[in-house]
Image 1 (cartoon, helix red, strand yellow):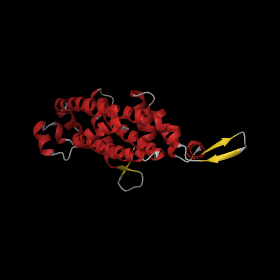
Image 2 (cartoon, rainbow, N blue to C red; image 1 turned 180 degrees about the vertical axis):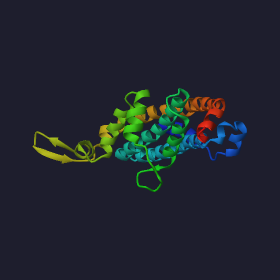
Image 3 (cartoon, rainbow, N blue to C red; image 1 turned 90 degrees about the vertical axis):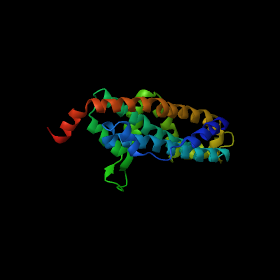
Image 4 (cartoon, helix red, strand yellow; image 1 turned 135 degrees about the vertical axis):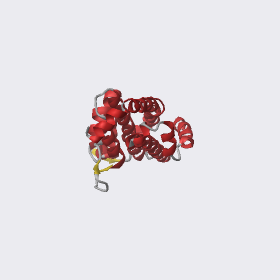
Length: 233
């Protein structure tokens, strides 16, 4: 996992420590009077913090040859990556006139404050089927299949239990128990991880800044219309 460690070293030193709303308002007061733009910026950084934390822990587990735990953390990493991809696609949908800005605003609220255990007033968006299968798969074909494979490792189904911890010795008619995760998946863990790290870098460094700047301009250009809609006039 040497290459993953090298990239992570740079990522750890690049984590944003704070975002000041006053600076955003000075930059574009019209665009940043809306809460959705601030939530978008915060969400971008939150996904980065979570991805870095997950991968830091994954490195520790993989170094101890705890491949199952590492795969489960990679699965969570993909879910978090999906949030950023989804956010960027929804931003583009506003610019293309496919959804309203108010719908986008609601989405940013759900992404930041949604929960499944009712700890907040907003319901979480389904990461598996809505975000990864429906939206992320469109842009990155195959991402959902890889995610589904990792889910099989995480869940106590055939792969997560029988395949991961036993094999059949057909010559002696016996079932042999052992931890097989390193043997089965240890060799491709680094390249699989690097693949998703590249996708995250693309979405974080290239896609989000471009779409966000376009959104700022769009908000300034459509300010009167949005204010009229908000006031019901």
